[in-house]
Length: 128
Image (tube, rainbow, N blue to C red):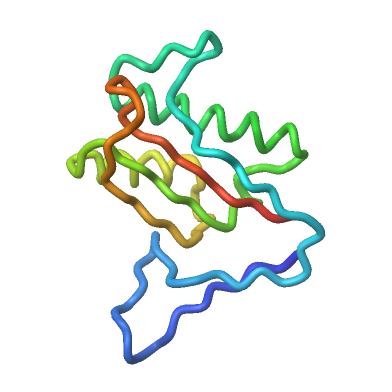
């Protein structure tokens, strides 16, 4: 599989070091579509605060990826659903910590989550 960042040089706002406009995925053998994942521990209890929930989410996502014999390097798309717009920076920092230099298209949306104690939910698409 080959991943190529596609960032037009003109006619659109510039991409940044942690943001790409699009990624072309060439020759994937398979795709993994991951449901929205919350910051819940193994017993299904939500983390006490935003940072804890973000750590749990990325831990849960890594475990789901491992089940498919994939890693965060296989992620080709991230969508975050934030309960509050003030969570944007913490969410971005958690994503950057989890993905390192692996830059993929992302979207963050402010929504009302299904439960009051769920502060953020993230779904991903991975390819291998």
